[in-house]
Every structure is written in C-alpha cells, then in structure tokens.
Image 1 (cartoon, rainbow, N blue to C red):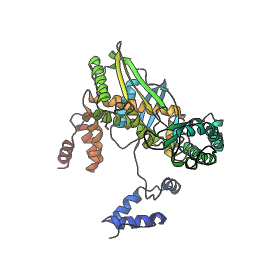
Image 2 (image 1 turned 30 degrees about the vertical axis):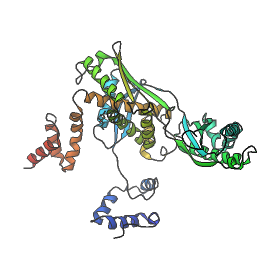
Image 3 (image 1 turned 90 degrees about the vertical axis):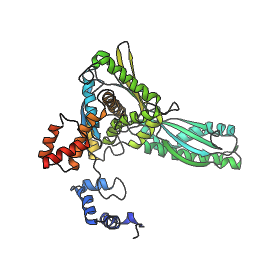
Image 4 (image 1 turned 90 degrees about the horizontal axis):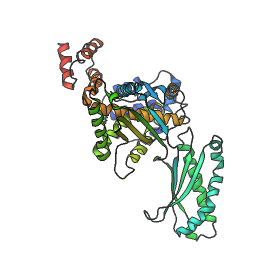
Length: 438
Ligand code: MEV
C-alpha cells in the first residue's frame, strides 16, 4: 500500500484524517475516534488551536498544574506548570513551602541582552572590510529604523553591531554580531527582521563601495538569524538560611544534610554524566513554566545547556555552599522570555497563566522561571540525598499505574490508602489490584 501522499496540506481536516487513519491504522474507526475525542466543542477555540500550526488534526493535552506558596522577593506567587511527568509539581510545591518558612527566594535580573548574527563570506582583505564596516554601521542602524522605531520609543532596540572576523575558524567567514534590547518581547521576530535588513544593507553597500575589488563587492550572505545562546540575558535565583534551619522531617540532621547536599552539587559540577541529569531536573521546573506561559521551551533548553558548557565542560547550573554556618544555594541562568507577542495574547490558558502571575514583565517572568528551576533542583537533591528519589516519585506515579489498570474510583481510594504505608512498585500495585479484584 502506498503510504506517501502529495498535497496533504491542501486536504480538509477530515480528508486528512480519513487518508491517514485508513493508510496507517488497522482499526481506522478507532484511530479516528481517538483524534475526535480531543476536539474542543467550542468551534472558535478549536479553530484557534488548529491555526497555531499546520496540518492540525486534533489537540495534544498536557496537564496544567499549580505549585502555590512561592515567596519571591517577598511577593507570593502560585506558579503554573504544564508538564506530563508525575511528581514535578508536587516537588516544586514542597520546595516552595520549605523556603517560604525560611525567607523565600531572592532573585535579580543581571542583564537582558539578546543576540543575532548575519553570517557572511567575504573574499578579500579583512582590513578593507574593517574600514568599510566603520561607515556601514550607522547605515545599518539607519536603514533598520522603520523596524526599530516602536521598540525604541519603549526604550529598547539595537544595542550594538560588531564585525567579527571568524576566518581562523572557516575561510572567508565573517559576522555582523548584533545585540538587542527587546523589553517584554522574546524578540525573535524583531531580531530576525532587523538582521535580514542588515544583510540587505550590507550587500548593497558593499556592492557600491568604491574601494572594494569586484570579488570583495560580492559579499555572500549565508544566513541571518538570532542566537538562542543568550549568556547576557541572565537571571540569578538564590535561597539561603542558617544550617540549623534546614532541619525538618526528612532532614533531621541539618549539618549532615547540608554537607551531603553541597557534595551532590559539587559532583554535578565536576561530573558531566551527573550534571546532565541534575540539569534535567532543573529543566523540569523551567520548561513547565516556560510552556505554561506560552514561551519557546526549545529555545530556552538550547540556550541553557550551552550555558552549562560555557567553561568547556558540561557542568551544574546550580551551586551550593556552607559558609559561617549559612547554607546558600543559587543558580545563574540565561532565559530569553516574553510576556507580550507570540502566544501570550492568543492562547486563553497562556493569558490565564500570565494573569495568575500578576501580568509579569519579561524580567519578572525570568525570575519566576529561574525560581521554579532552583526549587525543582532543591527538591530533587533533597530526596536524592535523603530518602532516595523513588519513594516520592512512585507515590506520585501510583495514579498512573492505577489508571493503566483502569482502576475504579473505589479501587483507587482503597489502594491510595494502602500505599500510604507500603512501598509503591509496579508489581506491588498490580498485586494489590489483583487481590482486590479476586
Ligand atoms: C527526574 O525527572 C529528575 C531527576 O532525575 C533530577 C536529578 O536527578 O537531580 C530526579
């Protein structure tokens, strides 16, 4: 059977579903029913979602959960998290509560600079290009004015443009390396439009430049694109308290807990295998808030992991120390986020999430997101260095196992009660379900 098609995008939604389900599924009716089950009965809302992307067939749900009781710079937040992994929201909530009683999270935005580059090839003398760039730079800024004037009115715009000689890495390779302030917008469209305009001006001006040879006039622009590596769009989040104040149910011996916690962070600083998992836990918190607030989690992921390797080896994003009896745990992380533009005014749940957070500026959102990451890492390390991760995780995962076995409400109530005092493993849950059903 031919499983390829041309003109798929031109079919209507139901034609797409018909073709796909009859071509790829043994039971096409049930495949269709599953897709339709997720359609929204509100036609306008469904159309909105259909139009976010191309070839939409249905909606893919993720749960939206809330981690309340976050105290950030003395202000209380309930943080929205969109994530499929059980125990992440519970862990964030627990960490929030823990630090609420110990002064909360302190955050600062260190910088908000975004980056974009025009990558081009110039065959000629670099000194001539450098000379040319001096007169080019004001023209680049001037020609982009129609694009930048609104952003400038609000206090943002192009910060600088530099010519970078990369010929030691690749023959004839140069860049226009531009920095931007995009205020409350993530700024991808703004930056990319400016860069494409720079590229056009660069080519035109080079072509008209009298001191260039014909080969030098013929600059080849390879591409113009923002960078998702934003080491100067940086936020810091921190918690600290006296070591003795760390003690609670899980951590009766505060000194020992602080010591093991700091060592766990030290291990992630020196050991990449551990650092990746350690940082993955941080991203559990970060991605969930980034997604709930309609931001681009792939951009954030890429930038954050690059930052984790900034010293030449992949390392922990968080740091911890005990000094003069004070435990301090902190993180500096690059986050390019927006609270205007993109999905922020389009997706009803994103609007809802931003209202829940008090309509934050991009800077405020950077701080909230960083806190979610730090809290997540604190919760993970606290479990790992005390009871182990499985106890809490399996408790949260219990519901997934029960649902997998289509447990009734009564069965769930009985088994949740049972597993309050018994260890949850996949087989122990199956055993108990079977016992109940006998
Ligand atoms: C699981 O999603 C995240 C953890 O593995 C993070 C960590 O090990 O620090 C628990």
